[in-house]
Image 1: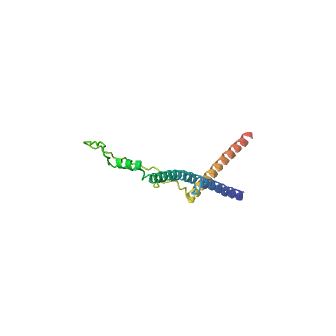
Image 2 (image 1 turned 30 degrees about the vertical axis):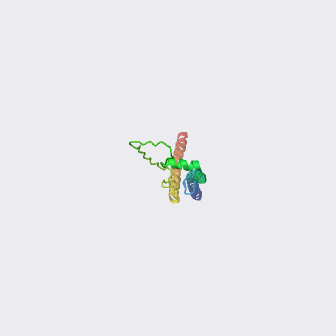
Image 3 (image 1 turned 120 degrees about the vertical axis):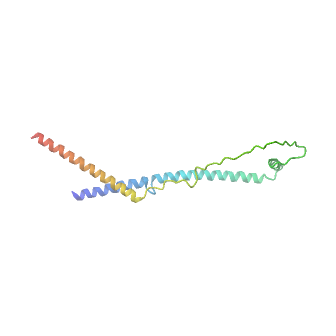
Length: 152
């Protein structure tokens, strides 16, 4: 009987440990979900960067066209002959707002729970199950003994 109990305890411990390791461990389900989210963000960033590179290449290819040169000249304040120039008494000041990057590499992601901690949790769970089983068994024996005493 003692051998059966010890084998059941070991099997219960291993079962609980492997379930916890599969869900919360360093290579578990939670870590894989976090990695999947990170991968999606990085793929979106890569796609946005690729689009930006493509638009910059197109802009570079068109940079020596007459219309683009005129637009750039007007942007930096150059004027053509015959244009009317307007001067404003107080220039409008524009201060760009700082954009906070929420998906930076500085954010901590879920790395998983250490195996030793999972073993401790599994051991504690098995101990609690054993204690509950012993308590339920003693209550059942007590009820059975009381029923036998009542029948006599």
